Length: 548
Image 1 (cartoon, one colour):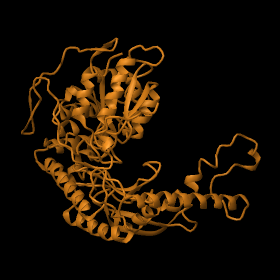
Image 2 (cartoon, one colour; image 1 turned 180 degrees about the vertical axis):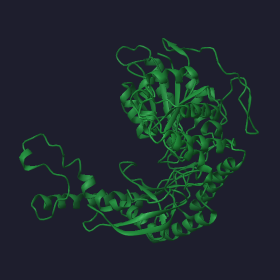
Image 3 (cartoon, rainbow, N blue to C red; image 1 turned 90 degrees about the vertical axis):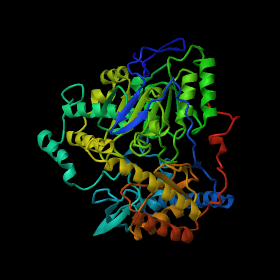
Image 4 (cartoon, rainbow, N blue to C red; image 1 turned 30 degrees about the horizontal axis):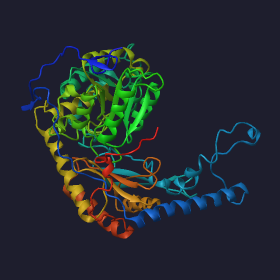
């Protein structure tokens, strides 16, 4: 099997093959990017990230709230079992009462008794393009959120602070999208085949060449679904006898891909280089369990920007460890491609890294590019291997031609190949909006997580009742936000997650900030005491124990 990094592993030693690229200065759209010289990629960019802890009384009341909710849940289940309260949840048919149950009542306890009370804050139907302003269909419930009915009213011009529309390219049709319309008329909507059969179009080849040029790598391959790009390609790269080292906060698609691969999985603490190095060192010293043979491959899985924390991977240090221990590196840039870096080329550019230091680039077109799908990029032999062995290429329908054209249009816009500098201006505007929004929230006294340059901004709410009140009150003020709780976050770390866009005007951000300031006082969620990060173990811990 071809190795992701173009090398061959024998008895745990990496033997590099000949390079196809030469280190050089690469001129792109009038901008010069200096590739790193003499093999030195250990560039350490200062990282300003915050993970402040909540005051003790907040955590006490948060757990107390869940405890009271659990007690009332048991009480309501008792009333339902005796027919005193109507049960709206799925139950077993009387004819099948002696069968192995399809619905385990306790497994559904949290959904039935806690989530259902605040379910109106999720899955809200949108009836417009997800631009900086969008329209929301009003709905109400007559049975405490078990079912909803639409009122027929449209809530117009809601400020969109939840969509991953980082560069504002997911918008209504205008003349700049004429090429997408032309492709739709020529190719139609669907492909009706996989990439292995009749589903490879000239548009796919054009897009793959453009992605490779954008990332300054040898080759790329595109897929129709971003989630499947991870979950269906990781199993093609590693398998039994291989070791995966995964960040504890990796996205579900990375977790699923790792599990499907059959490889052994070890988890390291989030962005903690000591934790990662300990696992790497133990893997090299002890090898596989029982046999003590060397691992066939060691693959490190990280994200560029972590979607729930807003933190940025410490790429330069991870690359240094990967080189030291002869491992491979897989970087998921779903949220970082197009949104960070001087020209929007992701964390690789953000840290001024040599593209050859990363073995597997992964990214999606669903955020900054206003489309759908994903890509894998890197060395040509890696991509050629995936063309033959990727489950997504073999079994999934190819990317829709109009979608491919939208990505091509967006990528050329960012690169300046459309003859303008508007794409670069949007990248710069996103960075400016991000810094402004984060700084103002911090000054107001909110606890926010993540890197100061990450457009994903989690604001900690903690208590489940406040999560619901926060989202409901903001919608009344025509501000749409995403609120997140358990199990997507730790039980006591429920939060609102804002996504800043280049399309947001300063007036929009100020309106949101004014509403948040008032909401923070009303709900008493300004918990910050401006202390140093309460999670030093994320970066500075030197002694710890890892669970098996």
